[in-house]
Amino acid sequence: MSGKTRIAVVLSVCLFAATCGSVWAEAKDQVVSPEPVMDQRALDILQKMSDALSNAKTMRFQARSMIPFETSAGVWINMYGISQVVMQGPDKLFVSTSGDLAPHDFYFDGKTVTLYSPAKNLYAIKSAPPAIDAMFEEAYNEEGKSFPFADILVSNPYAVLAEGLAGALYVGQSTIRPLSGAGSVETDHLVFSNKDVEWQIWIDTKDRLPRMVCATYLDTVNEPSYTVEFGDWKLDEPVGADIFVFKNTTNASKIDFRYPSQGGKAGPRDAASAKTAEGV
Image (cartoon, rainbow, N blue to C red; front, side, top):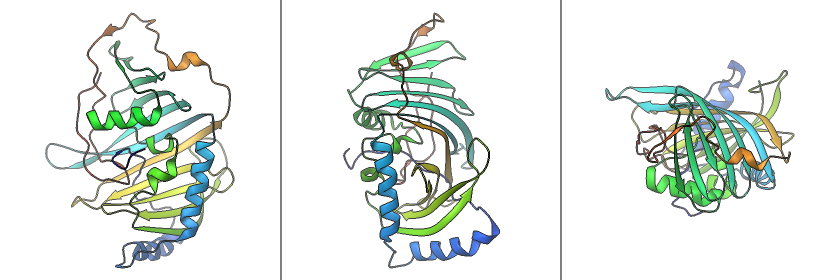
């Protein structure tokens, strides 16, 4: 994927527990110092996560997002969204999104992209490049649109996430509650910095899959933050081809294609504001 790709995969700065406060404070000081730390341990763990994702032929997961939006009054607010994601590389994707964002289903079958609004019973369809990477890039270049978890769905997540890094730090291990299920998850807590954004990621120490990502955007006075949690991971399970193809079983009306309305900030590699577009 080219260096111009703007795809978001980031979340807000989070505070876990008082016992972690001093560790994070020390880590943040190192990341933003005049001579940023470039910790090879953090890069190696990020690479292992990338390998686990890119080697999977299919994946399912749930993503819960808190996305920053700037109101017309200049006040930043967070909007809640939850998505069910099914992917079959390199050219098939289904995402069902609900919450505060415009609820919609997204279908990509390697030839076309279809958006369906269950609430309004409307759908829109357009031709698309024959790969997920190229489809994401076209969506961003044309509309400024992407999913908050798009960087982990590309063919080489590490190449996207490590592009333009100014700092990398291994903070240590952290125990967090998973998005779903009982018990807790042991994770490696990593911190990275780019020119305009600081972002953190918590990666499961066992399966090397992401559990949470947080980002704070430094190019805005109010430093808005962005958070995504991941759960219900299932890799390399059989996936029916029908899930990626829209079937108009509700006699939905066809409209011109527009991505769902999405303001907020872009990904960890580029904190430029995304363009806004009306959605179905």
